[in-house]
Structures are given as C-alpha cells and as structure tokens.
Length: 536
Image (cartoon, rainbow, N blue to C red; front, side, top):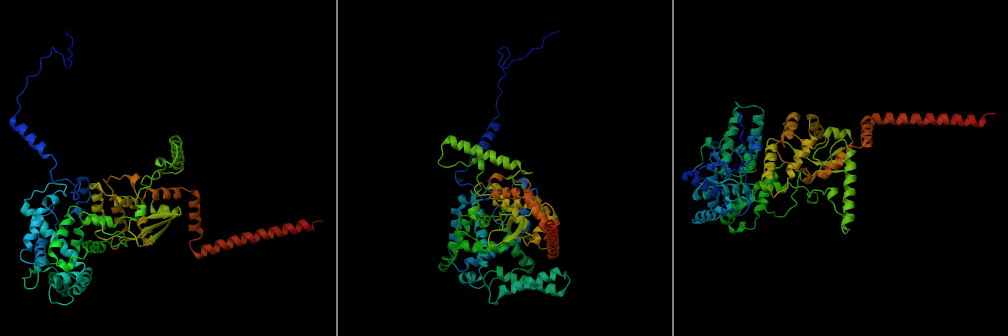
C-alpha cells in the first residue's frame, strides 16, 4: 500500500505552474474600471442629494417618488411627470418677461459655470450632456423660484406684475378648491355642479401658472385637476431624490428679479412655504442658516430646542474637572457602579431607545400634556409630566417622515433628530389603544386616518433604519421615563388616583369613608377614655 504524499507549499520538488499569457483586452478593461473608480477632480465637497438605499425604498417605494413634478435628474424622464414640464416652461417665460433679451443667455452661462459644482452635489453620476444639464437646472430653478414667489402674492405682483386682469384670482381659487372638495366628498361625480367646478378650476388654475397675458392658454385636458396638483407640488419638493442645490435658485433669483426685489430674502420665501407644508405648531428660532436644498432646510427648521439638542453625556464618561488622574478614575468607576446598580433595579434596559407605551405609562402615573410654540419633535419629561407638541397626521405625513429619515441616514453631517423622534413615537405607540390615549389628550390629530393604520405606520417607520441611541437628544428623557415607571410608589399612586379620584363621586365616597373611620375611631376613643376614668 503506497503512502499518501502530502504536498507542502513551497516544496522545491513540485514543479512551478507555467506562466500564462494575460489577455490584453481583459487587462485594459480592468485598468479602465480602476481609473473610473477615482474621484472626479471637481468632487471636492461631500454630496447632499442622494438616491434612497434599497433597504429603505423597498418598504414603501411610493414615499420617495414624486407624484406630479420632477426636480433634478433622478426622475426627469418619467412619463407620469411630463405634464408639469410644460408649466416649467411657462414659469420660465414669465420670469424672463420683465428682463432684457440677453437675460436668457446670461442665465444659461451661469448654469454652465455652475455645472461641475452642481454635479458634485449628487451621489450618483448624471448621464447628461452639459447643455441638457444646464437646461434642466435653469427650468427647475425657475420653477422652484416661481413656487416660492407664489407663497407671497404681494411680492410676486410687485416683482413680476399681475398675471391677468381678473380681480382676486387667488381668492377665487381658494373658494373653488373648498367647493370642489366638498362636492367630491359628497360623491357628486355625476353632478352638473361638480362638472362646472372642475371646468372653473382648470380655467382659474391656468391663470396662476400661465405666461403673461397674450400667450395662448394650454388645452383644458393638460391642466385637469391642476389645483390639486399644486398642493402635491409642495410635497414633491420635499422628496430626497427630487432636489437641486439651492444655490442654483439663488443664482437665478439674482439674475431674473428687478433691483427692487434684491432686498427680499429668498430664505424667508422658502421658510414660508415650508411652514405651510408642516401643519404642526412650531416656530423658527434661527436666523439665516446654511442649507443645501429645501429638504435640508426643512430638516433644520424642525430641530428641537438647541439647549436640548446635544446628547447627554453618560455618567461613566463624565470626568470631574480639576482632579488628579487617580482620583478621577475612582470617580468614574464610582459613577459606573452607581449607574449599573440603578439600572439593575429597573425591569427593562434604561437609556436604550426603549420605554413603555403610552397606555402603560399612564398606568404608571405619567401625565401627558400638549406643548406649544415649538417643533413637534421637542418632547420633554419632568416630574412625571410628559409634554409633547401636537402632531397632525395627514396623507403626506409619513412620506415626509421617510424622506427626512432617509436624508439623515445618507448625509453624515446632520443630527438624526427625526429618526430619534420616530423611535420615540414607535415606543409610545404599540397598539391602536396608544393612539387613542394620545388622541384623547389632543397630542395626535389623525384626521381621516384610523388608529390601527396610524399605529402600524409608526411601528414600521424605523424598520431597516440604523439608530445610534447613545447619541439621541431624547436619551435622557428615556432614562427619566423608565426610572419613573419603575417606581412602585408611582404605580400605587396612579392606581389610587385612577380608582378613587377619577370622578367627583369617587372622591366624595372616599372622603365619606375616611370621615366614617375617623368618627368611629373618635367614638371608640371617647368610650374607652370615659370607661378608664369612671371605673371604680
């Protein structure tokens, strides 16, 4: 029987593999791919406009898709968005109508000069020639500028003049919109009134988006239901993939508007638009921040109170100032032991982005109150009272949430406030009963939605989302809530309040029972006292 031969690597007795010739086409292909992987020389800044990662998009693809208008290159050629392209040309025509003949060339030259800077803002390479790319920036920038001016009719009229001679066109539009919605809600689809309203709506909406007087108006079929589309435009401007850099809009603003319009802050027009989109009660506390695009500005405006936006320092990382190193080390270990002991007393992990639901917190004695004049994500908790700003749930609320969260996941230079708020709401709302609990306090306004659907959407909002809970601006709040709910005294007090102080009759019954006990005790004491002093 022959012995097995074990070949050891490097054995000189093993003949070397004869060299093979390398295919020249293969090596050239690899070299081209290696060269293509290099960063472009003009990509100096980090990009700020991203395509949504597949793991996020797969959960709700429609949330990231524009519905009526494409802004930027990612959705430019989609057939369902081509109708609004005609209105982009009309808007550009109107902005150019007050300028001299050479202004169009100046705008295009400016767009060509900004091309490399704009391309560097997108995460994906843009397969468009320079001329087509400049045209896209010009049309989309004019469209956004027109939308912003539309929010201030007095400014629009002063800078661009009236669209038509019809008086109070915009007031009539609002009336028509209200009437049309009432008719549609009543299901009057075959009613002559609804047909008349639709025709008037199309005519009036055309006045808003038409070029200056004298131009041919578009066909009615092109602008059917355009008034409804105008509302969708505002929300399409908050899609993460539907952005252009705001410096493009600023460049066109400087070129196209007359001298008297230069002192009007474009930032204020953008803020007015975003305030209208968000139906919560919040106030801007910032001056003129630096932002890349409209979604980025919206994210900045929603930031919580700056004094609470910094994440708390964990106790075991806090080093006392002006102490020797050895003493400081002992202090750190002491803090760690105290914090570990404190956590072990709680039946759940504290400060880990998890806490009891709204109904469970109420059972533990937490009181919910509305918080006003702040961002809807500015939540606070003190002494058993949780103050939560009002959140209105409507058709586009969760798509806006998803785009803001996707922006936070993709852009490294921003804090994840919306993600942390979504984690907070996911913890608060686990069942439809939790939605009802917050709704009864006026904190949630769900409109036509139902409790089951709202609970499901909140529970799915952070699926496939990376969350670093240690950096959350709400980390301290989670710790306080868990500590409060872990106290047996707070639970007993809540049970007492719920069972004996929840209505006036219960309070009267309790007081009467206590009074009976006191009187019985006094009577017994008096009897015993009399007996003791009068006994022979």
